[in-house]
Image (cartoon, rainbow, N blue to C red; front, side, top):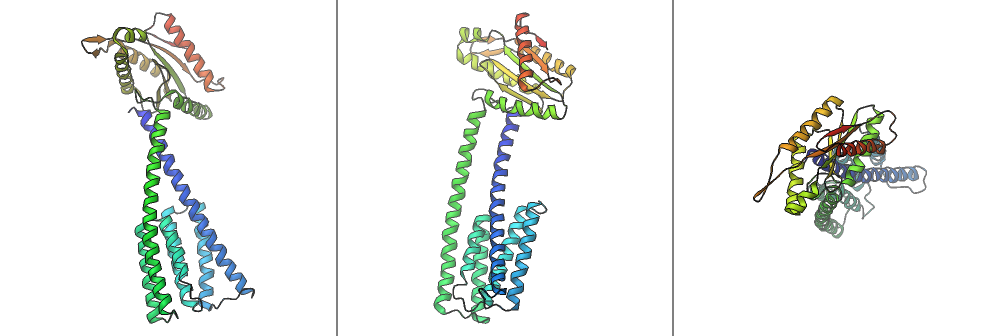
Length: 359
């Protein structure tokens, strides 16, 4: 795998990670907004007497503290002041504390254990099954302690149903989450393989014309904006059809692989190397002065010329014609750069081949 192919794939993998990060960030943000909304709604309706709750002062204060904490975490999340994983853990922990407070100070509600179900559901989605099991265990321990030592006013039937429900819910949702993660990983691998098929030349392993077109326009815009040099080198293997006609297409495939290996040894990390036709290749180089470019193309051309390619009992040789062009202030799009390089390549072919031309 050549350098730019590897860089392109790393960029794609990073895009997947960013997409997954944004997905979790979006879910966490919605969870916090929902938590703030319902906590604030309960507090306001209670204060106005619209829907009074049997709260005591501790529960009221806890509710307002929770609202302020969630609002602070929302701000930290949107300002990237704290990592997503830390904020997620804090949201789950503060919500667990609020659930405990509601369980203690709303004794008239026999169904108040439902808040633990919601908490565990969110934990399995945002964190891991292991953390989900931990909060399930903590919830059960808290319910038992509250019942036996703090007088939670739960009937034995409600107590046993709540604990059994938490256990069953956690096991089922953990199984579902693991299966969902498995399907997501398989889908990610399939998308990755489809991405490879659409952007990588299957024979040589370097970028194909489609991927090169996308990257080249991006690089053109970036280098133009920052007034950095950008050089396009078009390469065409001389009389490549003779190799296929003389030795067969298998020999031609081997010759192309040799050619790509030679180029890969010479290009640096800022280069974009692609196969844009049968025996046509493009090399896009950023931030190299013109004299270095000429030295690079001369070395590539000489290396191709002097490298024998073994095939069965035969030895094949290749030569290379090159067309070179560099970004100018008058270039409006990448097509302007490409047209000059293509014209330079045409001149190299008309000048006897096995040479390079700069326009």
